[in-house]
Image 1 (spheres, rainbow, N blue to C red):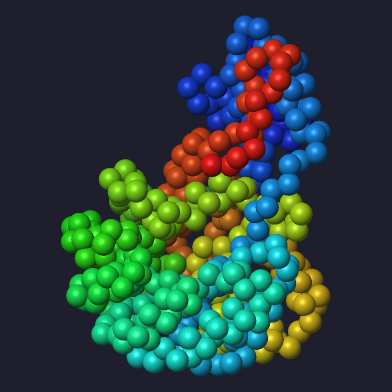
Image 2: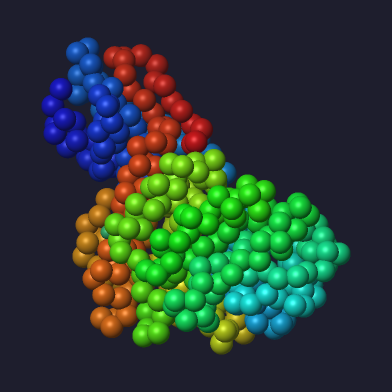
Length: 412
Ligand code: SF4
């Protein structure tokens, strides 16, 4: 069978990308909303394959209830500001019942007073149109804590991650000490407490040595290996740790993914990429990217970013958010997201098959992010997105001539 001819025909019906997998060819659109596997055989003509694919695409799409996701980073200091609650509520109600919000509260030091966090979570649960739409996670280096207070937060559904590797204020070479007894106590209370190790050029060789011990202490709650640039307090400025070498980082992720695969739901940045390839990158009904990442900085500015919170494009402020009508905000958000996506400056991203699944690189100026850093931000994404795309279940499988199609709706 002529693969090139098949590719051309599939392009005409909108499945522009393809991957070869053993004897099969996988066709899909860039947002991965449709995946079709073809098992070429003697009895299958190109015409019959295309007819089967076309009739699948023309049939009414099954309703898939996957929501749009907001990922919102918030510094702990801003929790004291009551305007934040109102603006978070506005965000969660923007597309009513059709969205989920993942609020990540970051602290560079062990938080002492949890009163406002508790109030904020209660407020979000009580006032939101959909009280279960907020998934709240606290990322910090924890020290001693009040058991009763933590129990209450646990019952409110707050999750935690133990921040390590780089805390936003320490010099690049300083490794934050993980208080293993605290990690153990939190885990005994029932918290799943993954280690959030922010990887940079100077700490990349240390984390693997520590992992067995840390996994013992956190009762096998797992770990996460985001780049240091995913920490919202990171800047591409002198005095901040450099990103690791691109291939060292990709190799670290591959080794950990192979050795500790049972933690694949928490190993960031891979879990986020796997989710994108599972549900598709574009929310067709709302005509928006499936995941929208927002960063709220210490000054209360709300920005939209693709990979690096500190490179977020300013969108609005928490004051404006809290005062605006939902309709006004919705239009505003759609306009801003569209403008950022259109303005992508990196030619490589525009030509990349994984652009929609990855999101691409944030716009930077020349001093902020040099070539080698771009490679670090990109290489592992190319590698893992390709892997996840080849692993996911197809919506349609064509292997026989003129017979019922095997349509697989589940998207595992
Ligand atoms: S994988 Fe790399 S080239 Fe492709 S969109 Fe992402 S950052 Fe850009």
